[in-house]
Length: 320
Image 1 (cartoon, rainbow, N blue to C red):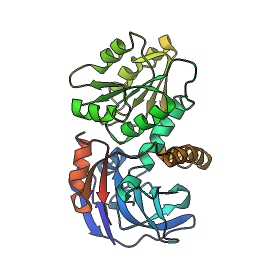
Image 2 (cartoon, helix red, strand yellow):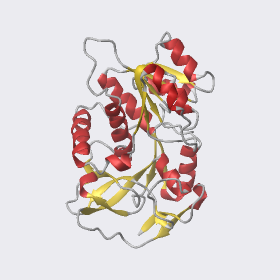
Image 3 (cartoon, rainbow, N blue to C red):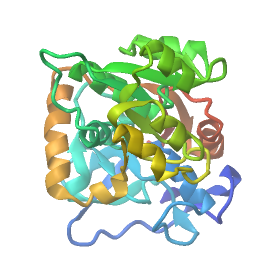
């Protein structure tokens, strides 16, 4: 079968379309004929050698997909650690979910990683219960125009969250505001720490969804109000978090890690998340934002677009 292979560790040029053997499912797995795959920053890290637990190359890339389950012919979307960017994938039965009838394969492939991550970010922040009879909680969402960012805005709108988001252009921010973002901050024009301070009259936000790493972890802590939480789920800058824990003391603040690879093994937690997400989906409140679709043969170009932060919404590979 045809697959996208990480031939060696390095930049997006290490990706090659090759013919590889069909996957052999083990007990608890099912075969899926893949139509589309969603690209995540974790895929870039896997190619570079910076994602924990990834086997040595060569290996088939990809962790998110949509297609047809060969056992019963039903359309499903799913999550795996690798092997998704291929014509067929052997995936855990527990990590396959039905795709809404009106969704395209590209939309299905854009759902699992982004929406489960966004859901768990609100869960970690203690903000899943809608605010009733009190001021709306405030959340700062970094890279708000990306896949997780747009998912977080859709969910935040349902929860009654007052949302602040950072992005690199006014055009991107305008498009996310159409989804429900209230306050957009162009970080190329204005320091987001100062912007948050001004917009909240010095109070700060209740939570920050942080996936930048480096100096931004500490900077995000400084954006918090008393007892606020920073939810860390990535390091897009490629730099480890720079954080002196002493800055947490004055506000009673905290920093929480979020790793979907770990959480995906917690069946009860995943089922709880899916129950809520699927309810919102059925009500028509959630729908992935697709920014760019590339054929498998142009995967290097797709990876580079995400790596350079030029995407809006999800970057998807078309396989079927």
